[in-house]
Image (cartoon, rainbow, N blue to C red; front, side, top):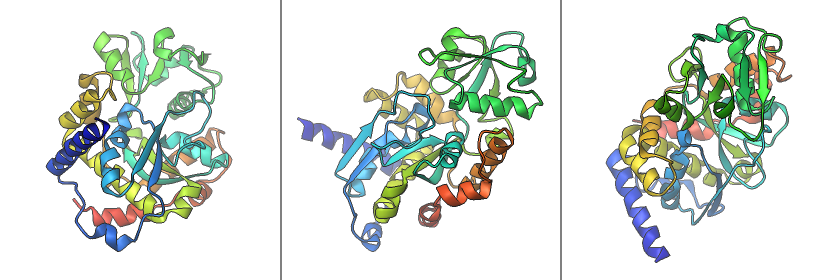
Length: 326
């Protein structure tokens, strides 16, 4: 029975991939040489980067036989890559701070643009209106706190003096507080329930919409020791990203059928609205953008040049941009 289910999943995904026109040309793998390992460990992705789930059967087509998904650690620490995974979706903002802190990760590609929204109660129309108000985050130093700090500084607010930070590591901000950052599927749920309204949407509001929100990060040791496997993982995930962009309804149904998305409607809305533009946007420019702002805000000490030199490797992305031309 497990063999039958695996075969059905493989056929379903390859049919979907074929419809989107993303199957590999024959001979590509042979030219690259053999895989150094057939095992790959991925961090369970959020809904907005569920292309990592959809990539599972594409990874099998790349030659991987042992594909494992691991839940992210239950903490608010900056840890895009932890010891039990080889690849993980990572917020660009988290990644910059993690590289500055010396975490052993290597950024490999940008995946999508804009996934979080800042919600506020009625009477608050902009970030500037948050002066003197309570803002909910799960922990100081968390990604929502860091991003809100940048948003506040962007409009001239002092994030320390002008905002009242309300924290609770156990409860999501949307359940307790007047204002807070929401990530998919939370924005879809809040909109559906009529709770508050979005005053920032990073998918459309500049300058945030001009840069990647989510990146693909690799364990530094894995990337260094397994370059062939790394390229094939990146290729499978970028193809799955193309699939989400080309066939969002089919991809959302695939996720919902397997219990990987809480609601088909939320999954479809997320996949349809988020910008899967890995070819169009500049991954390095994204890291430079966040590094400059985090350094100005006092979150990091490293220069953008050092962050890029220490924590990025775009060679696989550059090769795949040439190989996977639209």
